[in-house]
Image (cartoon, rainbow, N blue to C red; front, side, top):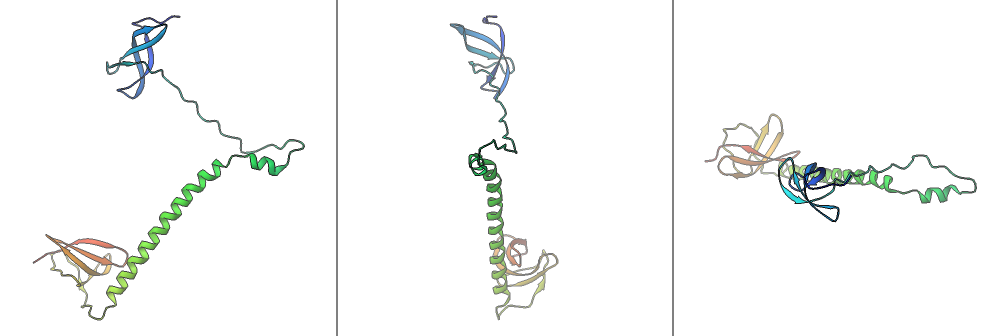
Length: 172
């Protein structure tokens, strides 16, 4: 069957970014050159609808033929699957390691701030309390904390045992 202008075909639309129905506008030497999308009415070059084939998975069991050495067969096995599973595990381990280091550093900073000799007595935290740098507060959820700085208009950066948090306060 020969195609002619006005016939319908499936093509990849550049505006819709999808495979949609198109009307053929121009054919040169039997090849489709221009099409018009039926969904968005855009006119563009013809891009055939390419259906990508799924990759065939390699068999999990390798057969060893007579006379073949097991090491030779294992050496010929692609190591992509092992590398693919190892990479996310290594990334996860690196993220976990960084999180652990950050938590340890935060706790060391907290301990140093709490053990200083001039630390004032802890006050129970309240949203409407006035805070200044160096004050020690006792929060019902986060525990003991030291005010690192006061950020205007109504925030204080407080170092707790597990993390630094921006908490609400009153500034004079």
